[in-house]
Length: 352
Image 1: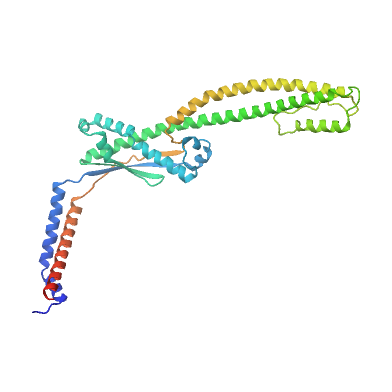
Image 2 (image 1 turned 30 degrees about the vertical axis):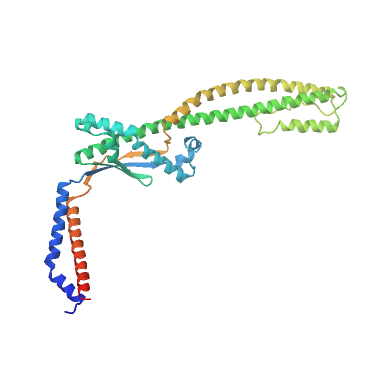
């Protein structure tokens, strides 16, 4: 039996180079035939810029919790907003409007269903910046027209929602202003009510003393301490110390001063309640519009930045004939290699 060596097998394979060439040619022809018999669809892409105005996010912090229960740190909020945009672009409303516009421009689109359009559409995005809208169709003109129409309708939809969001910002500012005004009035009312209640208690206490005698020093000091609480500059309402009795005056003078001080306080309290009622009515009128606009904005915030790309859509075949031919040739080479391996393995077994 002849001796066997792997070197001889390698040399024999090299000397049969024409077989390698045949495998590559046959594989390339098969790839070419597949490309011819099964035409590759066309991919059309259009770009749109979606960004976030970070400075405005901080200014609109009061609105963010009303939009979603998501985490409110900056990254999570940004990602949530971008997901909202992507979801709207792929929503039934936008795709239906896109299909209607396509059908109006070309009757042949009546043969395309909404589900087919949805399967053909996709969005490529990873963060704020340039996004790619993609449509894949068998016809290149159809793909280009579809992605351009989708971009236009989607952009207008998002822009309209951002206009609603701008109105939300205005209404939110009005609510904040109303809340601040109500808070100031309530603080003033609380101070007035506390003063009137405490002054009544002091009137009861002082009525028990001889009206002609001077006020006891310890009680006078306690009275002054109480009055000083209502003379602080940080209060929304302050008591006037004008005509406050001298220490040598009788108790009656202090009673008279307290009753006189109650008059403007009572008048201010009535005015405060009237102002509070007006402010609460104004706020109640804003809230329904505010809540409605938040719903209408679909959660989008006015801090989004949206810019379309006016360039012509980019069109390419998903599988080009050249790629399929080269791929077929590579598979032919791989097939020859596997045949050679099995042949060498068979020779080894024959010489064992």
